[in-house]
Amino acid sequence: MARLTRHELKEDEFVSTVESAEEYARQHATQIIAGVLGAVIVAGAIVGYRSYSAHQEAAANAALGEALKTFKADVGPAPQTNLFSQDANTPQPGAPEFSTDQQKYQAALKQFTDVAAKYPRQAAADFARYHIGLCQASLGNDQAAVKTLESASDSSDKNTAALASVALAGELNKLGKTDDAVKVYQKLADHPTSTVPRAEALLAEANLYRGTKPAQARALYEQVQKEFGSDPYLANQVQQQIAGLPK
Image (cartoon, rainbow, N blue to C red; front, side, top):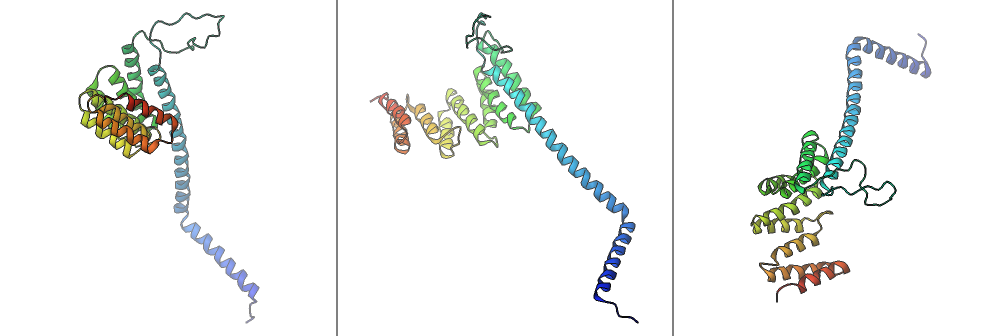
């Protein structure tokens, strides 16, 4: 029997491997096809979800923008538009016009509520909930505002949650729940964010005490002065606040 060379042995091994692969493919064709189709479906689903998510985010942001336009709209009779004037105060086409604050905030409340309901998983929904609380407070519905702002202050978006907490503290103080408001400010001071820095939270707490506990207010102002005295603007503001306290 002739001895096979090393090269011939390698070729024979290669042929055997190919034949084995072909045989395996024939025997498992259904499973292989199903696996390939499954991978294609999963990839398509991922692409589809990302496209859908991007579309939802864009739609949510657009709806939020319209609601904010209403929330910030001017109130009162619309100014006369001079076609030959380039006055910067001339209202933009399509800008909402309201004759009363109540009318404006009721319209904004509806828009923000729609955003939160229609796009609950988008970041815009959290910002909308915060503004729902602001609208409720502006309409005099303080109890509802507190409930809404408490929910918004638990948002996973820390910056939006901080803004909601500031508004919540203001509502609690308005309702005579000063101690609860102080706790909110202290929590904000201990966990500052870019929207509510520590200095702002401490100053808000100090302002809360100005009329009832001036000594406590002074202590907080001095704490801000000590921690943030290197900021000229902030230091000047604190000095003015301290100067205005009762002796």
